[in-house]
Length: 76
Image 1 (cartoon, rainbow, N blue to C red):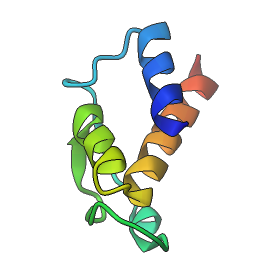
Image 2 (cartoon, one colour):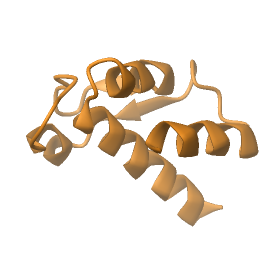
Image 3 (cartoon, rainbow, N blue to C red):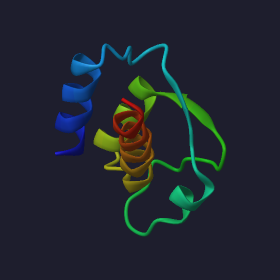
Image 4 (tube, helix red, strand yellow):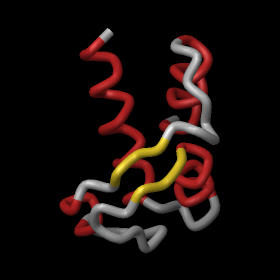
């Protein structure tokens, strides 16, 4: 579901998944469950985070995308 929402918002707001970079929040790396092994303050593209979310089912990558797009919606 997170991937669907991210794809929808990228299309709606013309966000490029390759050039848009997101900084990983340190608390995101402390999530329980499956992980993409993200590092605090690491900077990744949306494309990389989507892979981290879908391939190893990384909760940390999903949360990072959710935080970014949540802030994007608040600003618009």
